[in-house]
Image (cartoon, rainbow, N blue to C red):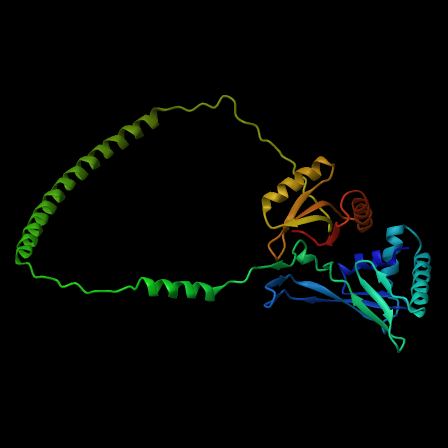
Amino acid sequence: MQLETYISDLLYRYECVIVPEFGAFLTQRVSAKINADTNTFFPPKKVISFNEQIQNNDGLLAHYIADVEKIPFEIALDKIKNRIGSIKSQLVEKESVSLQNIGKLALNEEGKIIFEPFNHLNYLTDAFGLNQMVSPAISREEYKREVEAIEKVIPLTITPERRKTRPYLRYAAIAVLALGVSGFLGSKYYVNQVENHNQIAQETANTQLEHKIQEATFVIENPLTAVSLTVTKPVGSYHIIAGAFRVEENCDKIIADLKAEGFNARKIGVNKYGLHQVVYNSFENRKEALDALRNIRENNNPHAWMLVKDLE
């Protein structure tokens, strides 16, 4: 039994996954950060740790295995016990055990389990599709040196101009002002005459229009019948996520391809990081959603995952 696969599935949704009689895998959210030395941007993620002291069975892992494999709860517990027995035997023989997508286990000199997490998989669903990015450094000092070199070659000088007094311009300005005043008074008289004419014409047109409306008779021979449309709204709290995209046009292409394959694909909104999420389908029943998720991972997309959320 691939126990690590079931643990990995649960780490997306829970902060603590207890493996009975062995220990607990814990997740802690870490904010996005920047490495100033390498100019690398890291998205937010969940950091995985292991606590050997927490071993009490809370039933989460066994119930999940029982639901996926359709077996009784007791048989799921026996499978977990057998797998843990094999892991402990390997550790006692000084062998390290790698759990796929989770981390590597080993024993130290004191016989305590030490855990080294793998960092290639981000269990924070809100950061789905975000990868680390390296940005080239900005060479501000180089630009400053180039500007200083240009200033040395081509110095900029500002020389004030002397304004000469020209008396004839004063008289020309007075003449222009007089012409402007007379032109303004004449244009104002013309505008008033045009407005009066337009007002009379508007009143005449309104009177004729009211007369025509009173004489008109409207007859509707074929009244339109009411049309009822039934819109089916997708329901369900269990959503199989196909991907999340920064550009919404990419969602439309993915949805068209998935519908061509027979899926009831659609968009379910934008998460807090501004990514448009696309689902294969939504389900009301948790068991049906898990069955669909397993089938999609086996036949279509091994990176598909399930979001449990009530949509408005």
